Amino acid sequence: MSEPLSKIPGGMRYYFGAEARLRRAVENTAMSVFDGWSYEEVTTPSVDYYALFERGMGHSEAHRSFRLTDTDGRLLALRPDVTSSAARAAATLFAERARPLRLCYAANVFRQQPRSHAEWRRESTQLGCELIGAGGATADIEVLLIAAEILQKLNLSDFCITLSSVEVFNGVAASLNFDETKRAEMQRLIDMKDATELQKFLAPYAPPGEIAAFARLTRLSGKSRVIDEAREVITNARSVAALRELENLWRVIESLDLTELFEIDLGDVSGLDYYTGLIFKIYLSGAGGRVGRGGRYDNLTENFGRAEPAIGFVLDLDAITDVLARGGFNFAQDSESGVTILGSDDDASLFLKAKEQRARDEKIKISDK
Amino acid sequence: MLTIAIAKGRMQDEALALLARAGVGVSDEALRSRRLALLDESGAYRFVFVKPADVPVYVEHGIADCGVVGRDVLLESEADLLQPLDLRIAACRIVVAARDGVKLKEMGALRVATKYPHVTEAHFGARGIPVEIIELSGSVELAPVLGLSDCIVDLVETGRTLADNGLVVVEVITSSSGRLVINRASYQLKSAPVAQLVDAISGVLNESER
Image (cartoon, rainbow over all chains, first blue to last red; front, side, top):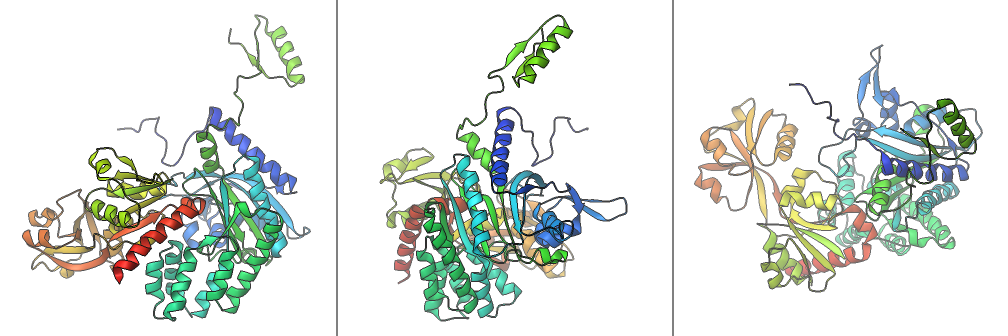
């Protein structure tokens, strides 16, 4: 029996009509904000060597890409992210350019998804930017403000950007002398906010009072108070330095009167092998999962031969437009509004008129008679 | 308002009793009705009653902010959820069971009947034992008795059903009990009411520990 032509592969879909216009509008808004902060658009290859993504994202993430082989037998992949490619370009193609590099993109990415999960799409569109060659709090704040500005320009008010630093976790794991397996287990328990299991797991390694306080900490999410509480529990130098950086960042957020938009979530421990400092996640009311994520990845460009500080983020266009569309948000104009219908039996005069109106940038539609 | 998805069946009564002690109660009258969505007495919580396997689905999509469901279901669904509390209700074990006298260790590959294909695959996969998984939706104990499979992976509370069908526990894979699960976005965007609920429940749990 042959497959019906109507069938579409799982995780793929069409976009059309109002939804397609909404997607275009969201993309344009993001790209104009990036442009307003002097980010240059970059279009990366849709197909690239699998080895690039393995270097850029690490094994476990790159494994989710769609793979195919080149004519010479080398392994290729449909891009599962853009950052890997941008980092390689920064270290090679743009090696001679003045720093910092400010790059942005709106690009579709392809990932295999486990079935039946909330994140079902296998093709999705990322709106993202990378600030390469700039370190420190100034660069961190720049990208955080860009992310917030995009969401605000889309008239989304009920969102929250959570801040953490991978160094808080790394410091604790290092002070406990954990090997890779134990580290991964601690990360998993903190990620699920499973304080009960975390306490049991840590019991052999530290005094009970300290463990209880630490376990509570990973469940805590809030404003600057979280940092104060963390300081009372975490004493290793590496974590303390990271907490100090977070606090400095928070002070700037306070002085900009933006504390409403941000939270500190020390329980955010995802992407530890990839990020090196600040990490952030973006949550939006109406979307079940995260609609964006980002952070500092100072080691990534080193994989491509040139070590330099870098920070970036991506927003999930699909998740954002889902929320806007469900909110009945009238962002995109109806395709029929303000259109002049032109019709005539004489094609020459019809299209003369059409050209005149198009020269004035008026919207027309040729009548089907 | 927080929406809480409760797994219907085995766990439902214990879950509601625990929540009532934490100050989140539904009136008996409301429970007697056949509505699938109910408000609590304060109006701050909405309960929805769904099949256990659907609890992680509702919570992962953010349709329900929180849920109460067994760890067995969570392991099988592999849903990306926060699991801050072990509620210590409906305790049971996920086990490998076979007919008394059958030596599974001497077989090169196993036919396993189960309602938990993911858990089964992960368990035997980690030991390098090839398995043919036969997915059933109920009365799993029957499979080895009738010769459909060599063994089963199933949830065991008292072990009575196993014994009545001539099966014995070969290996305990893991223990399971009711868990509170929370959607990642709700945890951040509704942080105050979520924290209040978690604190109230853990207060009750700590009390009963003493």
